[in-house]
Amino acid sequence: MASRSETGPGPAAGSRSAESSTAPAGAAGPSRASWAVLAVCCLAQFMVVLDISIVNIALPSMQDDLGLSAGGLQWVVNAYTLAFAGLLLFGGRAADLFGRRRVFILGLALFTLASLGGGLAQNEVQVIVARAVQGLGGAVLAPATLSLLMTSFAEGRERTRALGAWGATAASGGAFGTVLGGVLTDIADWRWVLFVNVPIGILLIVAARTVLVESRGQISRLRDLDVPGTVTVTGGLVLLVYAIVRTENSSWTSATTLGMLAGGVMLLGAFLAIEANSPNPLVPLGIFRFPGIAVANLIAAVLGAGMFAVLFFLTLYLQRVQGFSPLRAGLAMLPMPVSIMIASQIVTRMIGRLGPRPIIVAGVVIGAAGQFWMTGISPGGSYWVEVFGPIALMSAGIGTVMVAMVTAATSGVPMHMAGLASGLVNTGRQIGAAVGLAVVTTLAANRTEHETQHGAALPDALTSGYTLGLLIAACVFVIGLPIALLLPRRGGPAVPVPVPAGLSDGEPVAIAQSAVSESAVTESAQA
Picture (tube, helix red, strand yellow):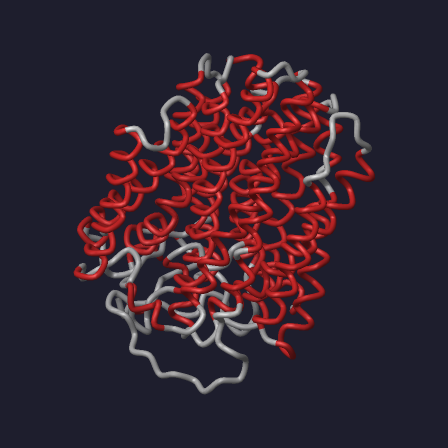
C-alpha cells in the first residue's frame, strides 16, 4: 500500500484519489475543523478506555443482581478484553482500507448498542455477550481514532500536541473509570456503568457525521482484511481462556479440558501458518526481526497478567471483605493511576540516557516488591498499611515498565511500522491479561471453596483466595526480570532489516492502535 491517506477540507474530499492527498494541516497550522476532529477522537478514546476500568468496581453489585458465578464474573472482564485484543489489529486494518470515518462510526454504533444491551441484561449470558460486542466495537473504534488524527494533523509539533492530548485523555479514562464507576453504582445502579456510554455514543455519532471527512488507502477489497488470520487468532485465544475457566468444574487433566487446550494451540498454530503465507497478513511476521519487539511483547503479556489480576482481586477484597462502598472502593484505587502517571513522567526524562533495559529491570523489581507486600492483606487489616503502600509501590513499578517497554518495542523500527509495533504491544498486554486472569482467578476460587468446606468464615476464605491470586500475580510479574535481560544493550549497531511483506513506506502509521495510552502520555510529556 504505497498510497497516502486523504483528508480534504470539505465533503468532496472523500471522492479524490488517495494518491493526491496533501498535508492535512498546512503551514498555517491546523484548522478549527482539525481541532474538532481532535475533540471527537479524544472523547471516543476516553469512552473505550473508561470501559475497561469502570466495570471492575461494579462487579460485586453485578454479581449480586444477576447471580453471576465465579467464572461468569471473570468473563464479564475477559469477554471485553479478548474481543478487544483479538480484533484490534483487524480493526486498524479495516479503517485503513475501508475508510476511517466509516469504520469510526461503525465502531461507535456497535459500542453504543452493546452498552445499552449490557445495561438491560437480565442474566449472565446476556451481559457477557454484550461485553464481547463492546470489545468488538472498541477494537474497531480505537485504531480509527488515532488514524484520523494522523491524517488531520501535519507531522511535527501540532501532530505531537494532538497525540499528546489523545494519550492524556486515554490515561485519564483509565484513572477516572474506577471513580466514576463507584459514583454511578453508589447513587444509581451498576447498570449505569454501561448506560453512561449511550448518550456519549449518540453525541459522538452526530459529531462524527458533522466534522469528520472520509479518508482511506487505495485498496478496499474484503480479502485484504486477512479474515482467516483474524478468525484463527481470536478463536484460539477464546478457546484457551474458556478451557482454563472451565477447570472450576472440570479438572485440568480431564479429556474436555485437554481437548480444548489442544484445539486452542492448534488454532494459534494455524494463525502463524496463515500469517507466514498471506499476501496481506494481519501481523507480518517479519516485524519480529527487529531487535526488542518479541521481548517487549513478552514483557507486555507478563505486565498485563500481573496488573489486571491485582485490579480484579483488590476490587473484590475492598468491597466483599472490607465492606467498602463502590464509591469508596473507587477512590481507594486512585493511587494506582496517579503513581503510574508520575512514574511515566520521570522515566520519560531518564530513558534517553539509560535506555530501556535497566529501566525495565528496575521497574519489575519495584512492581514485584509492591505485589509481594500486597499479599499481606487480612480480613481486618488497615487500608493505609495493607493496601495504600503496596498499590502505590506496585503502580510506580508498572508505570516505569510501561514507558520503557513501548520504547523497546519501537526502537529502530521505521516510522511506517511504528503503529504495528505499538499495536502489537497493546495486543500482547491484553492477551496476557485475559489468559493470566483466567488462570489466577480459577486457582483463587478453588482456594476459597476449599477453605469454606473446611469451616473457615467467609471473609477469611475470600481473603485466602485473594491472597493466593495476588501471590501468583506477583510471581508472574517477576518472570519479567529474566525476560528484560534479553533486550539488546543500548547503543548496539543498527541492524538493517527488510520491510516485511504487507507493509510499505507509504503505509499509514495507524494500521493498528499506534500508541497505547502509556506511550502517548510519554509524547505528551516530551511536548
